[in-house]
Image (tube, rainbow, N blue to C red; front, side, top):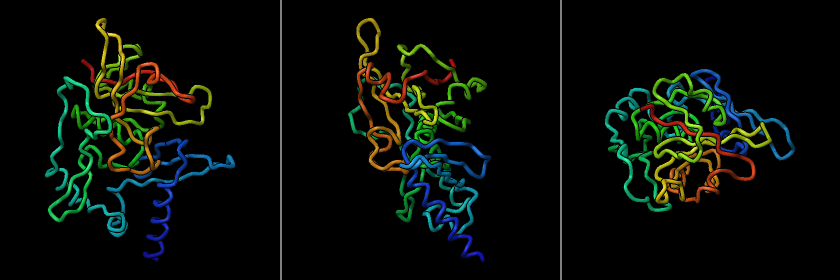
Length: 252
């Protein structure tokens, strides 16, 4: 019975890496996150993503995750590279600034503390982790990326910015659907902004996961998730399906 249950869990977890790109997330408590998506025929697909900290030991071993005790120790030992000091020059395109994983004493890759959560490879997973890595502030927001502006209004540590031209550095940009409300939206982390002599944004350097440059959707892709992308301001504002709605930054 135990082995049968583990097999079912493994099958469910495997499904999370094949969810279509237009997936929507529903927070369903501390134990599980539901991902609602649609296949090529328009049929609804529901995938469950389980919190790794609450998985049975056998399942964690199959997925390469440590036990709760090991993870607690790993969090204490892992060294997160803080970039809270704003960059003084543009980062290199394609460079990964985030410290997402590290090798323990056995050579096994582990997630650093800000990124040790569920939803690996999702844009919300990365943006929340990068924000915590840079600012030391954990964002307790769940649900669709498109809902982050409204969901964060009650967080005393965050400030919502709706002046799109301000483009605050080291903030999270939130995108919402233009017309198709089935879309989950998108979030990314703004690393650096090039401006003209009047302070107007010219080029945006941002990092994200599950975005337009990602080669494997809905799964963590080392070297791709978190890499620096440069776009001019007009391109950054929108794409064919999503539009920029605002930013989340540390409240001053």
